[in-house]
Image 1: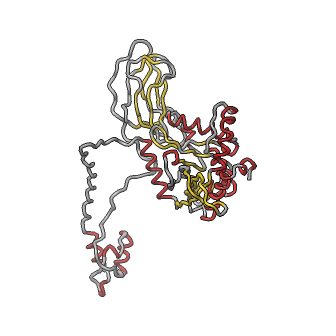
Image 2: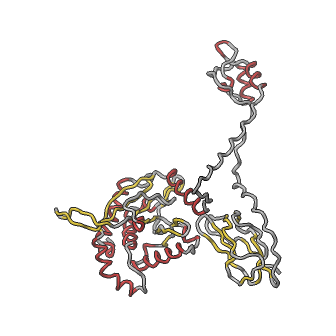
Length: 410
C-alpha cells in the first residue's frame, strides 16, 4: 500500500511553493521522518519529510515547478524498489484569484481623433444615449455650427471597429557576454525585491539620523561580559540587546512608530514583536523576537543568537518571519558607516545600526576621542510626524548612552 506525500500547509498567507531540490530519487530506501524534498516559499525553505519508512516512488512534480498546498509530490511504496516513472511535466500556471479578470479589448467603435465636440441635435442626442456614444467620439457634425445630426451618429456607428493591436513582443534577454553568467533569481530573492520596491512605492518613507557615544555601553559590556556569559550558559552579551531595550522604551513613548496603516485606519500595537534583520544562506531575512518587551537582556540575546544561527542554517520556521511590529538592522557588522534602511511593510519604522568608529567629539568644551555610531530611523511619514521620529531616535540615543536608564525603565 502506498503512502502519499503532499505539499504541507506552508503557514500564514503562503499558498504556493517551488520545488527547489529532490533529496531522494525514485527507488531510494527512506526512513520515517527523513527529508525527501526541499520546497522554497516566499519566505523560507521547507523540507518535506517521509511520513513512513519504505521506498520512494516516482517524482510526480519536477524541480523548479510551482505547486500549491495539497499537491501530490510522490509516494512511499512498501517492499521492493518502485519503478522510477518519468517525471511529470510541471503543473499548469496557477490561475489568478477569483474575481480577477484579464483586460479585454474595448467594444464598439473607437473614437476618431480630432475635433472639438459639438452639441447634438435632439434626435441625435437620443440615438447617442441609446448607443452609448459620446459627442467627443463623433467630433464635429454636419449640422449648423458643427452640431451633430442623426446622420452623423449613423455614419459613426456604421464604421468598422479597427482590429486590436497585436501585443508587443517581449523584449528578448540581453545576450550574455564573455565572462558573464545568467542565473535565475530564487523565489526568496524575488520576494525580497518585490517587498522592498513595495515599501518605496507605498510608504511616504523618510529617514532621520543621529549619533551615539558608545563609551558607557562598551564599558558596561567589558566589565560584565564574562560574568554574564557564565551566568547565562554561554550566552554572550552583545550591543543588540541595548538597542532592543532602548527601542522598546522609545516605542512605548511614541506608539505611532510601532503602528501600521490598514486601509484608512491606524492599528496601534500594545506589544513589541521585534524584527531582527539577519543575513541568511539565501539572502536577508527578518526573524521576529516575540513579546520582546517582556524579555531581559539575557532573554533578548538568547533569542537573537538562536534566530541568527537558524537563519544561517536555513532552519527558520515560517511563523518566525511574520508579525513583526518594528525592525532593527545592523549594517555595521559588514563595515557600513551610514545607510538609509528600507521599511519592512507593513511596519512603520526600522532602526539602522552602523559601525562603531573612534571619532573626535566635543565633550565639556574639550575635544576627546570617543567610540561613536551613526544611527538611522526610517519611518512612514503618513502616520509618524518628523517631531515624533526625531524624538524617538533621541530616546534611543539617551538609553544606549546611559544604560542605567534602561535598567531603571527611564
